[in-house]
Image: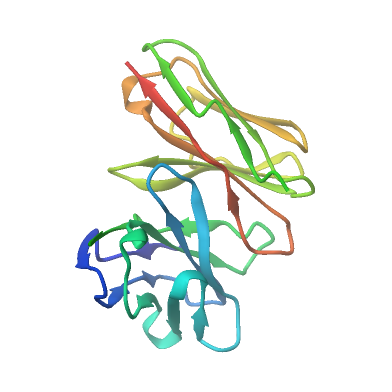
Length: 115
Length: 113
């Protein structure tokens, strides 16, 4: 079975600082990769996704992520965070080997941005 | 598009009571997923359906949990009897088979006292 590891459980940054959240997955085959964001009290929303092509993907609100296949990683980055980025961030992977496309989520990283 | 709709948003109940959580997927979506979110375990997949048929229920914690999808627009997750350790946020998500993106509902926050 696949697994997803998010190494940073809780990150605290000041506004304008740069952000990088780590995500590693365990599966050797073809995968689709996702970052979801959950703002306080809200549901999970898709931030960005990688299906194929350019390994550097750009999402909403200035976020981007880079897929490095050799490292089984899909780290999330933002050059300058804002207070409104305070949220929980989840990395997810789905392996394209059956029609179920079951998603596997990491345990999440809680980001707090201090004004 | 109304998105995935879950009800109730909050549920407080006493240990031993039956709890039923409801989900209406996005119209036309043929996959439906139930997740549980806790501080300790993060987001766990409980069960998912394809075309109303349960495909994988290996994440259902025990026999107290059951899920049904009687038609394409409605699913329930039932806990009977409920226990305090079932307290969590339960999310429903749906997706359209050939589009590999899951859309989440707002969740049901369950508190079992």
